[in-house]
Amino acid sequence: MTIEPLLNAPIAVQFHVATVLPAAVLGAVLLARRKGTPAHRLLGKIWLVLMVVTSFSTFFIHDLKTVGNFSPIHLLSIYVIVGSIPAIRAARRGDIRAHRAQVAGMYFGGIVVAGLFTLVPHRVMGAIIFDGASGFVSGVAAALVCVLLVAAGALAIREAGWLERFETFRRR
Image (cartoon, rainbow, N blue to C red):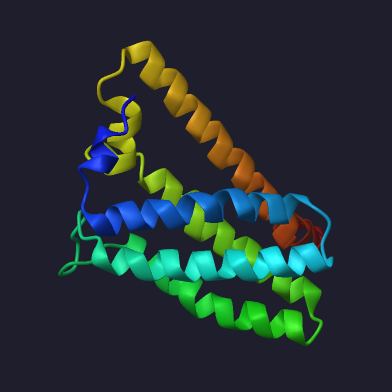
């Protein structure tokens, strides 16, 4: 493992990593801790700004070009940017269930799913984990990252209430 790929990456990638890592950690904390407190509201605003800034930063990263300079991952960025509006509106009108579902979906798509795509070989985060390390160390690092992403995904799914909706649908 080495951070050299990040240090040698374009400034847009470095900026993206500098905003997405705190968004990932802060989002997990917000999903796991008590809701509705003044601290939750403040940290939630910070998290939302980080997510939107992170999403905008992806439009300056063009290492996976599928359509022009863009890739399907950019759809997740659009989802987060557009999704931030109903998330804020739901919270302001007191529709906490809709707010929770929206922000959990943004976390799941914008952090968990996008995070899994970063582990693709020849991408910066994949190179950080896999380049220059023994097979064992790379394997342990990859397993740890996958466990963290799966745990974050499970947390987001729980908070969004997707399992309850699935159970309700299944009972019909």
